[in-house]
Image (cartoon, rainbow over all chains, first blue to last red; front, side, top):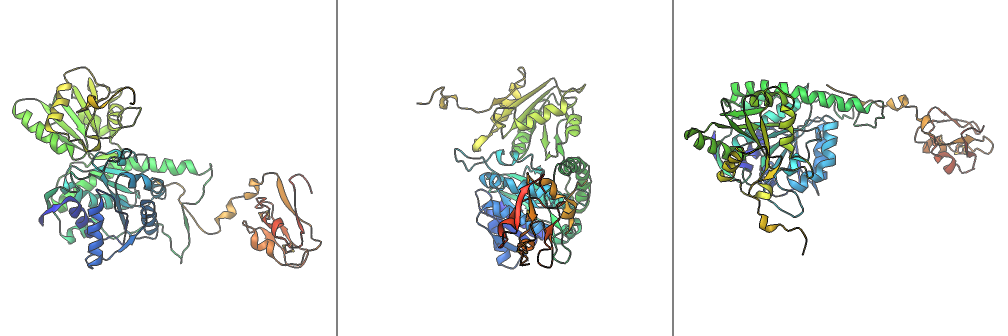
Length: 394
Length: 86
Ligand code: SF4
Ligand code: SF4
């Protein structure tokens, strides 16, 4: 049923329909409304789950790790410093192959403290072994949670999935969202079953110490499984479309006016909405431009990205995160995807925008398209204020 | 794909922790032993064996040389000696 909802509320509704048995979270802006809604649903008896209040995000992540290991579908959400504090446990959850779902309400990280949106928090967790999906709008935020649970719990995958949604822009943005009927979700997402679980009747140890003679295979297995996930996502997209009617292409990337485009921006998250707007305006004026939206950042769909970009002469990559002292994280992947390929774009320029919640306006996007007329930009910031910078302090 | 992920109880038998010893090993003197069994209880590798007085000894395949048995023995009947000694 179509409802006019805040993004956080919409995600809470989606989680309710996924029927988790354990939810544990610690409130942090801008994730708070999601878990507040869920706590309310549990208190009202609308969701039969255990909501575990904890004293930190480290404990929240540990709690869902334990719950998931006992064979209970589990959920948590966080942002920014909270995601960082979970970091140690996030590696453990992936290493123990537990299909936990986490919503990251994307926010800049400290210092200086900043509660507004960029994607540094989740991008910094790209090496944890979590699958990462990025959503453009609140409908995707709802739907990708159903998909996340299906993917995570797939017997051939069994890895945790992080659904990343831009803080405030989506979590606090109110949009019309279709909240599907419970039966449809039940059909798409069967009851949780873990092939290994902690059970006093049948004791086993998860995550034991392993020496040099075992460890490397555990990492190799995750690396291979990540590749397998690239094959599972398109199948899930097809099944999702059959049941819910919404088409997410292959769930890896969305090509928006990429065919025949001379210039394409690659981006992920809510900024893709703004870019589509600009693409529509400029296409109407005859400009051949497009957008490649990355939906799945881990595993990274290198081959699929190359297939989409191979006939595009000029590509700009827009990052809302940095790897300080190196290339921008998404730009790095795009360059790797195209490196050494026959039909690789002539120019792959890298731009960083929107850090700490600075608005990325239609004008910012047009600026990026304009700068594709010049020579390749190895990394530059859009909408930077040079007047705030000085060479020496004081 | 999965690598080694879980282990069943008792699987520690597969890990020959004797290789962890760093130079010292316990010697059960079997002279003043009162069969209090403290050495059995305290051993983290569960590798001390014995029943009657002066019968206690350990399995060096698993003994990791932690010295807890020697520390706890009320009769000082266990000594930590150099690996090469008898
Ligand atoms: S030294 Fe440690 S491991 Fe060896 S027998 Fe004594 S208590 Fe057990
Ligand atoms: S602790 Fe000492 S006295 Fe007690 S059983 Fe062991 S060897 Fe014998």
